[in-house]
Image (cartoon, rainbow, N blue to C red):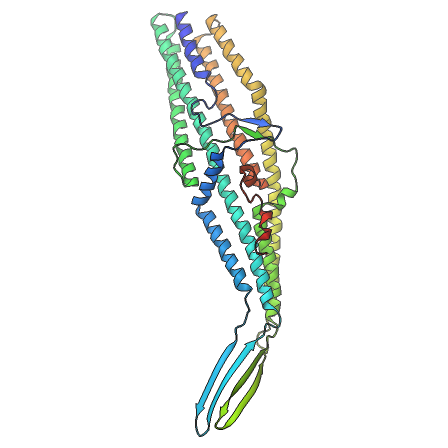
Length: 430
């Protein structure tokens, strides 16, 4: 009876530890119907630091600054004046000074300015796109790391449980209370637990390496994920599509392509050049006017207009395809989030309690002698496997929640950083 109680005490010590108990930085997870959730400031600071270290974000920011410079350049006059000096010494000495200016008669400057402003809006949306993409990648890596951390802690507890079971089985075998097959089974179960622990430790190391690679940081303590998630909405809000940064980028490219049609059309229009010249020819005063206009007889720029029109069609089709795919991704992400959150809430409501009741029944049946060592080992292993499945489900809930934030363009809003949507890039270039 003493050995039975000793073995069960070891089982309870291993199984009764709460989820995430191995690391105070990690938290449990609940789904809030009220939509209230608190983001730890360290998580926001972590993402901002990841942005600061990200080459992709810095490259997008450089592209934005380049687009801003192009806007400034496109707003300048298209043609500079020309100054001409001519002198000739023959039998008649001639000297003249001339000034000419080509006029932007067809307002090519305005067309170039509109193109530059559209490119600036696309570049601004590109910054938001990169920031969201990098943040999502970091959050997914963080969720994967904490899931692997809990799995590793669970497999370690399982190894400790099986080791205690082996020790107790050997003692009962020496006392003649246990068959040799049961001892062998206990040793096999312990070996399996050690292999599972080694695999989980390897997975944890890989997850942490992936987190370091994504974030560009090496931290002794990674920021915690929130302990509470807002419940997913019942259905998709179509307005969310319009705020997606990737679609804002493509809209900017589409509008830029349309503006290039107007520029190509104006390239085929004549810009006249007017000039004035004054000088002396021996003792005579010279004064002259000049007028120059190009003749589009060798190239009328019609092909450029057709090419620009087709490029605009290409960008429009790219946008339509991306919009359709984004809508499907948004619906799919919501469906995944709904399914995983429902399963997690069901586990919290009934699964955890059922697992605790199973532990109590195991204790009673083991103490009453109604379970053999083999049956008890199978039941204990099943209890741990259930908890491992719950840990995997919690990781899936996090991944689906992050995927929903990504698909709906709400990552910045969720983190509490601005700008939150690509729609806020409208002021770029204005």
